[in-house]
Length: 238
Image (cartoon, rainbow, N blue to C red; front, side, top):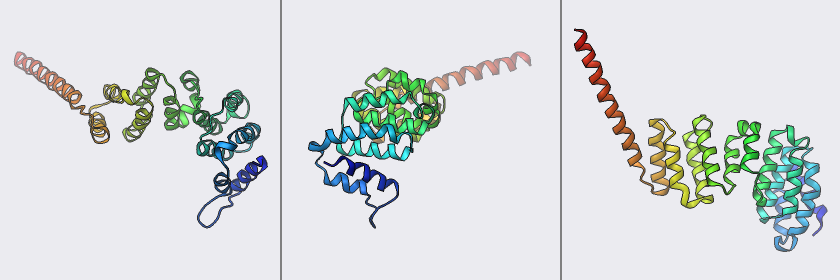
């Protein structure tokens, strides 16, 4: 494989060159290579180019991620280089470029730790959906659940977004999905609980109605007791 052809394909795609169907020079390049034969050469080229691309634009990093995903690249040396440059300029001050670099690390099979992601406040504040996906790429379910629950309690994520993110949890922690829904339900207001329970049933067949009933019964009990106290107070005052 001619490594220069990869760089040229990326540059042409950045320039906006594509055919009538929208097919880019990078698409052509990736269709012509043999991934099994050429993976190492591509990893080497990306290792040389990405440190340059981070100083140019986020679009280069988007395309680098596309390459990694399309050929199924898993390369420790490339991941180690990306980890090193995360703390350097311009990545340490450019959230968008740090996001794409973090996503590349995830796709390479070496995601940033939950601790590192928690420290990256700018990434969390500006890209909460992607941040949660990055968190879920880690193998520590309890840490992942805590991050998602925190996002819910801070109103950083909508019910609709949460339902979409549930699929990420299923793919990563299949047997923990029901536990995940229950943990989330306990932190949501009543209306949102109903929406999440309905989604859990429609998407995965989970019957979480008992958690809604428990809340409903508690509400009725409290309302009844409160009403009795109020009525007694009025009678005593009369």
